[in-house]
Amino acid sequence: MSRSIVPIPPGLRLLALPTFRDGSLVAALVTSVSLLAGLVRSMPLLLAPSVPVRLGLPFARAALAVSLEVALVLAPSLGAGLAAARFVDRGEARAVFALGASPRSLVASALPVWLLAFVLSALASLAWGMEAEAPGRLASRLLTDARAACVDDAARDPKTPHAATVPIAEATWICLPGEPPRLVMTPSLLGGSALAARSIELSADTASLVADDLVLVLPSNETTGPMTVRVARASVRGLLPLGRPSNLRAPVRAVLLGATSSASALLVSLAVLVSSIGSRALALFVGLSGPALALLVLSALEREKSPLFVYGLVPALGLLGPLLAARFARFLSSRRAPGA
Image 1 (cartoon, rainbow, N blue to C red):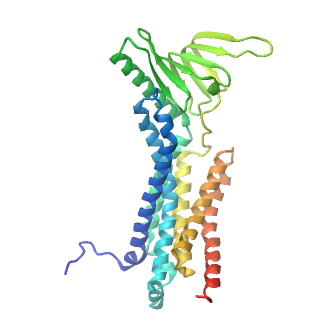
Image 2: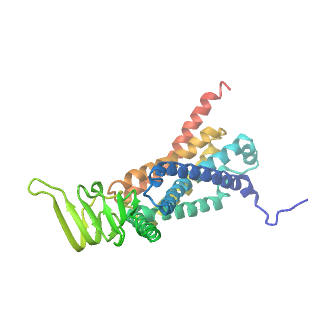
Image 3: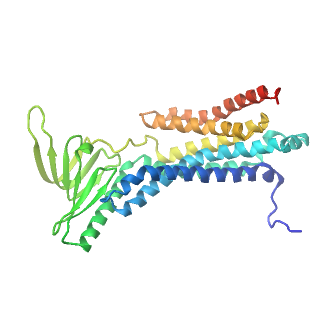
């Protein structure tokens, strides 16, 4: 008879390991679906003839970061709900409770899973939070990679003009024979103006830039016609941002979502066991309610200049959602019971 090298405590085998397994499967599924959706949205931009292939890597890293954040907030609660519902449906929960165990002690035995959920969710949120609070970092990396691609193409074929476009920045590097690369940015980004520069540095929020050898074309207005300005080095402010930066610092975001993910998963597991929910569909509903509400509220708060204390709504709704959903699931189960 084979024996496990490291004995697994009964409490971990009952709930913790099934929760970990189901949560891992859900995380892989959510990440895959999110990455596929991002790929479909980005494909028309990345397949444009003037967009260098190497720009796909920064896009892929950003898509992976946001996908992992969403997946690792949702997956622990969904995995906890599925594992607890299966435990109830098979009658194992009733047998364990008859032996003197309680739902609280059973959920407490899965403490390593809840801690792991906190750590993984916090790390994923930290990675995406660093990008979300400074979208200019991604734009700067794309501009740098596009310039390198333009220079490489010009080195291979020095007699032909080359261009490398950065889609989200609405900018294009132009490499003409015998001349250094120049960046051209389109009027829609600049609110009606256009510029060309030898080099450019975007601010973290993309609302300003510093450019060398700048040529700025200003549109006509009520008092003057079009104007062209050329300077050796200039700072341009008041640009239309490429995206609204998050007003939540990355470390705070990591702790906030890590705590929301793990606490919501723990509460989902407890609610499903206490309410004796054996339906997988109802368990998924209970598991999804808290993290989904938390992510929706977080997204809404990030779009405004919200004070830090308001973000307390994120974990609060992450905990309130499963409680209300479990009550509703118990009500549905009681309605169906007489006719079963």
